[in-house]
Amino acid sequence: MAAISHKPSTGTPELRQQLKRFLVDDPEVSIVVPAYNEEKTIERLLKSMAAQVTSYRVELIIANNNSTDRTQALLDQYGVRSLFVQQQGVAYARQAGLEAARGIYIANADADSVYPPTWLNTIIKPLENPAVSCTYGTYSFIPSARTSPLQLALYERASRLASLMRSRTSEPTNVLGFNFAFRRADALAVGGFNLNAGHTGTVNHKSGPCEDGWMALCLMERGRLYRVSSPKARARTSDRRLLESGGLGQAFTMRLRREWKRLMA
Image (cartoon, rainbow, N blue to C red; front, side, top):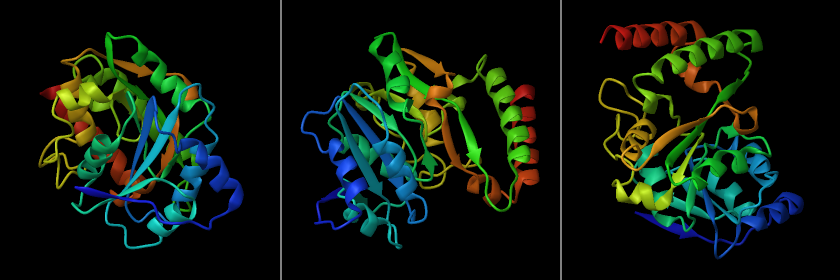
């Protein structure tokens, strides 16, 4: 499914040196990050990973999903362990990372997101309780030139309210791929990620469940889901998903329609 790249690198010495901490032989935690054409965001993600303050032994794996820009060149430049995943779709990338990981725990992140230094410890710690099978954190958006902090804050507040309502009847839909964790053995036991989720593994509510929510649903067979509400595990992610939906207004309208359908179901 994937080939491991270990090309020589000549990148920025400071960041490359910081990232060497993830080149361990016996990790307790594997951070898995799918990436597709992320040359504009990957360094920001790597800096936030390098800044993690953790008591765990950690490996970092970037699953490069057919990027055609400088994503792979940057990964090689910084000496990061990477996989090249030919099958297109985030579900394929996450599954390749899951199979290649060696840690007891898998922490899932995204290449267009950044994480506080406390993220890893906070999202993993609840999994030390065998009754918990999956943890998931909260998020906020990184404003772009086309969105304002106020607009995004209002959207995030509405999203959190919807998430709290869904927790009563459909908690797995609250689990987002860029901020959740589980035990590797549990994920493999339930069959891994659903490669048919959505459209070739992407978020598509019309053609099927998302790969992250599907995994959370399956993991409920192994234990309970645990929402990490602490800001210590809050990811900050790109607002491009909202913009790809036609803008913030269109994204808000679509969310209202989805939540209304769920309430009426």
